[in-house]
Each structure stands twice: as C-alpha cells, then as structure tokens.
Amino acid sequence: MNQHYTRTAVVLHWLVAVGLCGTFALGFYMHDLPLSPSKLQFYSWHKWAGVSLFMLVLVRLAWRLSHPAPRLPDMHPAMHFLAHAAHVLLYVLMVAIPLSGWLMSSAQGFQVVWFGIVPLPDLVDKNAALGGFLKDAHGILNYMFLAAVIAHIGAALKHHFIDHDAVLARMVPALRKS
Image (cartoon, rainbow, N blue to C red; front, top):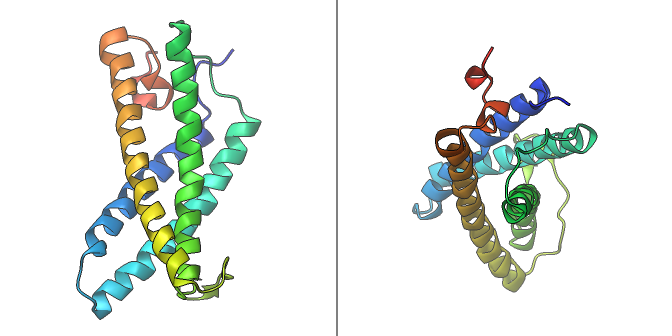
C-alpha cells in the first residue's frame, strides 16, 4: 500500500492551505477597517478568494474521496479516531466557511460577483437579522477552523519530532527518506 499522498493531493493540500491562510488574514485585517473604497476592494478580493478556494476545496474533496489516504501508523484507537475526526472537521469547515460567507453576503443584500465578472446567485433573500446571524456564524466558523488547523499542525509536528514516524513526510515530500 502506498504510504504517501498522491502528488495531486499534496499540491491541492498546499494550495488550499496557503489560500486559506491568506484569505483568513485578509478577512481578519479588513474586518475593522473604516468604510472606504479600499475596504470595499478588500471585501471583493476576500469574496473572490473565498469562491475560488471553495471550488478548489470541492476538487480536493472529490480527489480525496476517489483516492484514499495512506494508512496512519499504528497508534492508540482513540488517537486514530481523533485523527479521522479532525480531518472530517477540517473538510466540513472548508465547505461551511465559504458557504456561510456567501449566504451572509446574500442575506445582507451584497451579491457575490466572482472576479468582478461572474455574478453568483443569491442563496437567500435579503434579511438583516439572518445576515447578522450569518456574520457571527462566519466568524465563529473561521475561529474554529483556525483552532483545528493549529491542532492539525501540532499533530503533524508531534508525529515528526516526537513519534519519529513518516506522517508529516506524506505531505512534505522533501522530508521523505530515499
């Protein structure tokens, strides 16, 4: 059995990781800016990135479902369960976050226009109360994702530096031993 992810899975993982870090950072930065043309441009960029990442995540999810992950090394059954649960949580959040943003924009009456060219349909009618709820949900989901990513990175580093197994090398080809 292959002990590494496919090259496509590795590329998709790192593209999504870098894109999500950038989109999260932009969202965090722009959130409290005073209303200005720059803030509106940042929101547009954030939405463009969010839609692009959403599509990339769907590709990644389809790839993952059609190409099983390598087996985890032997570990306590509870750790094995937590590893799988964490990966499921990461995928759920990678889908839920952009959807919550799109729903929020729709509810607040701001249509999402991908790259300023392709108008996406509003998913719900304009509704200020729903828009406020979705704004809060979008923020909470992002912070949940941040916590899950920190745990994910921590687990990968634990495997590499404490357990001395090849879990991290499955996603970082430079760490693979010849």
